[in-house]
Image 1: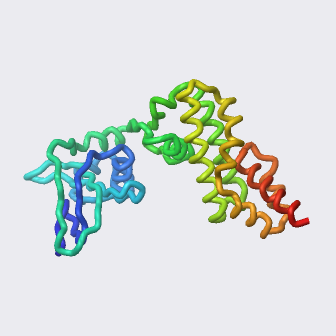
Image 2 (image 1 turned 90 degrees about the vertical axis):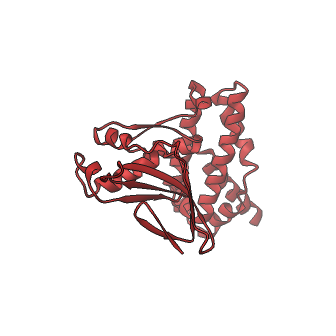
Image 3 (image 1 turned 180 degrees about the horizontal axis):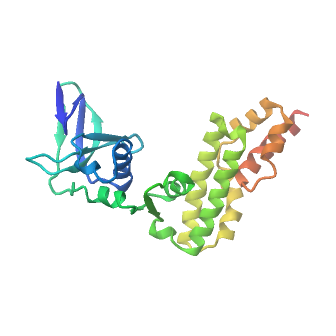
Length: 251
């Protein structure tokens, strides 16, 4: 059975209304302004929606009519058996289009990052129309120094083609997660960025690196080594040192 939600037809889905977040509103704004002018987009009769796979939500923009004002609605989306579709609305949630007008006037929307990795991702180029702020526990001089070290880790990984392979991506992601966990402990203990750098080598011993080391060997190409080394990334250096140790065992 199909249901209609904000002029869109859906089936085999359940929707739970949640508060619209800045990145979801920006997604709607981009879709609307793709074809409409800034001055008139809120008054247009067309409706649109924006799906965010990262948080499993869908956000609707519905233009105003003679019986209802325009609005923005966001829902968590869950699959369900056909015939059990349902919408769980929450009338206490603000659905006004004021944030769209702010974006149209050239302002940005403030967003506190959920965690450190999300903050870094936004700083790497995904923060258009957003003023992304650090989680409070990271908004210190030491926290920002550690963030810069983590950004260097990411940049070094992205600059080496070997880490674009599946094994490379998995390794870098696992290393970053361990680094963030270690950094959190250091901040809570009142440590410094130097403490974090010293801890990185210990942390990397816990990260599975056999796949990436073996992949480096399989390529058997000195240009991969030249491309990646020397590196500001301790994770990159560790992976190549692991590959070097495997070479020594083979001899």
